Amino acid sequence: MPAGRIAVSRWEKLGYGLGLAGLNLILTIVSTYLLYFYTDVAGLRAASVGSMFLVSRLLGCFAYFGVGIVIDKTRTRWGKIRPYFLWCAAPLAAVAMLTVLVPPFGEVGKLIYAYVTYNLLNLILTVAGLALGAIVPCMTDHLGVRSQLGSIGAFFGIAALLTVSYATLPLVRLLGGNDTAAGFRLAMVLYGMLALIFLLGTFITSRERIKPVRPEAIPMREGLASLAHNFPWITLVLVSATFWIVVITHSQTTVYYLRYNVGRPDLVPLIMATLVAALPGSLCALLATRTLGKRNTMLSGCLLVGLGLLVIVAGGPGSIFALIVGNLVYSFGKGIIIATFIPMAADTVDYGEWRTTVWAPGLLYGGMSIAVNVGMGIGGALSAWLLSLGTYLPNAVQAASSLHAIAWSYLWVPLIAVTVMAAWLLTYRLDAKIVGIKAELAQRRFHTRELEPDSGSRSESAL
Image 1 (cartoon, rainbow, N blue to C red):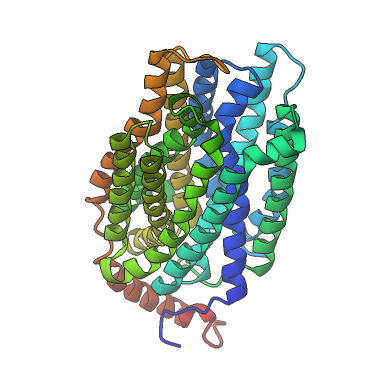
Image 2 (tube, rainbow, N blue to C red; image 1 turned 90 degrees about the horizontal axis):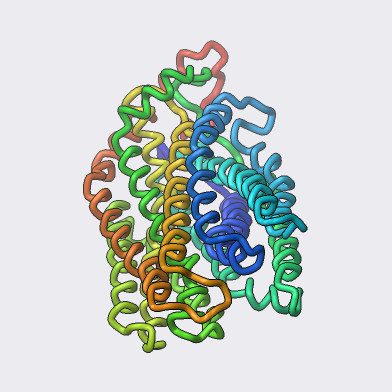
């Protein structure tokens, strides 16, 4: 096998995809339906929910760097990252179920309960998501295999996103009948159990092979200092945060837009089903990165996302055809972006080790998780605050100001955000350097092993 190529079995690729599917089963509920659940089922005010989204996400940022540091210092017989799939599986399922309970409290009691369960769920989602990202540079150092993992992971993750987006409201009606709260509880039981099984599958199948040049634990101060010199990582953090503003503002306003602006709540499953276009988008990303490079591939995804939103704007609420076509184009572009994030993030881990000798995937992905949470927090807050400013009233005929606020959240905020995201991407220039960086790191690792007194034969990471 050529130098620098680490074999990853089909079972490992499948297990990795299942992990992202399990994570997205719960994450999609949070990003798509939780605002609707809180306002129209639990009876909380939109402004209160928006503030909770933002405050919780921003406060959580302090914990996420800590989680990354803990992961980098973890040493177990299963590895440093693998055990987190085992440790997160059951808590993720349990807390997800608790999040969609409606306790018999007053509004203040319900809001406190929402704060507690929402923050716990976000923390577990972040740890599991951080582990799924950080394990990629530990599984293989081959750029092509990393891109494969990115596309496979995105395919499975998007399949889960599509399933939850399309099936949730029909499933809620099927399981709960006229009791929407009971329907959400039972649906989350199903999603939670599937997430548990899928994460356990990732734990069983995954393997950590790549060993850093410096195998000892990196001091926190040195690890944090290395981030300041990792310019591609800083760019990707900004890109990630902006991308999640796009996703959250658009997705969690879909139900509102179809119900009130279009006047066709029956179209929710159909429009959610347009997410299927993200599946071929994730597969096309693998081919596109070979010719365009990762950055330009992601830029093409941004272009398609923006184009899809403009198609919906041009058609207006009265054009169902424009709504469907625009969402298909939007989803195809989103699939390209999601699939490209995974290998790009892994490249920034290598760049950090090459630039500073600090190999800290947990810390770098912890920072990436902060970006995701900040983006989701800002996006969630913007949508909720816009509803509040527009004097939105649950389950009622909406005023013109409310319809205008919904349209801004569904179309214009994500359109502005994806433009900013593309501007950030133009400053990312790692693609042209990563091959040389990989070759130099391979030489450093080889020499490090030669100096080890009990090195014996070559380890897998030398291949």
